[in-house]
Image 1 (spheres, rainbow, N blue to C red):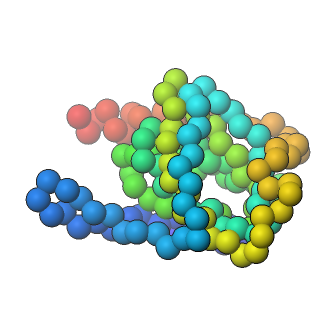
Image 2 (image 1 turned 30 degrees about the vertical axis):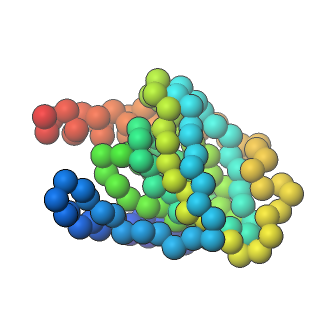
Length: 148
């Protein structure tokens, strides 16, 4: 499912075999394990020559993407395995409203050498809508507890 200007989300397909479930691998030039601490509202940052492919493997967080002077909020969780692709030049940040850390895999696609300003925070042009992020997280938690 496309969001804006190249941001994509893809549900992962899986094959169940015995007691194991195998998920679709993501091609990458480099794979990073990333941890976002609990109770964190992270700054924006942008990559100039890489595509991020994010998959949450433990916990949850809200990915914030800035495009066209508007934030998009995308809830990502271990309970709904999907990959979000963020192309070069798209400012993005993270909100983890849980007290637990979130762990994800970033299967990075390189389009050139890293830029010296990659991974450095950039100023937010306006504040995040934390109430909206809380509502998004709450909606997903309510749906999950309704199933059990």
